[in-house]
Image (tube, rainbow, N blue to C red; front, side, top):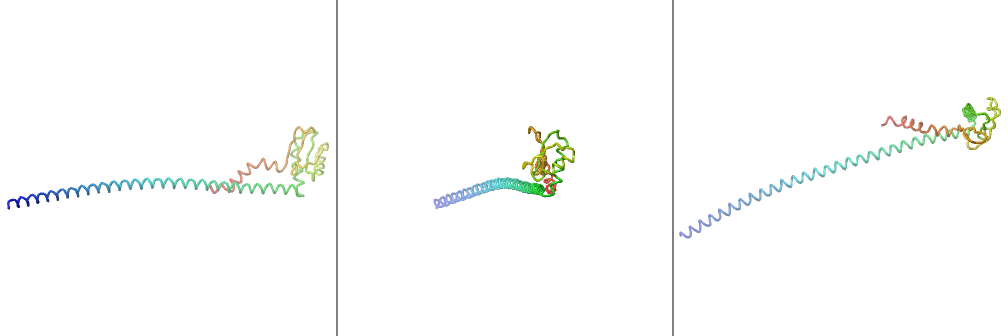
Length: 196
């Protein structure tokens, strides 16, 4: 029986040793699992933060692109509106040049170019207004000025020397062209500045 007791004691000690080692292995496994969970949580938080940062960047970039496209579309629309207005002005001037009311305008344009004209110039006038220009020149002290019909000045008048070395043109279209930049700025400011 002494052998049996020894065997029981050894078995008991072995079992206690196994249980102690098993408990220690479980604690170590639990520590490893907890450390792995903490590390996974940290990596997941870092990944989420990186993804959120990238999403925020993409959202900002997308907003910037959308705002730039909206600004570009707005500027294009504003430019189209101003172009339409200027085209309407040009069309109105063309209609005026073809109307019976154009006579007084031709006289006013002729008066401007003749104010500083050298003696011996030739006046160019729209074919329909040659006689009107001759009468105006005679009644304003320029009876010696020759008037020639010219399709080039369909909307105004011009003067040039006999040798054609210079020409002074005074037409509605040339005046409109000279004022176009200022008219464009005025339209943009008047129509759209309040919205910006």
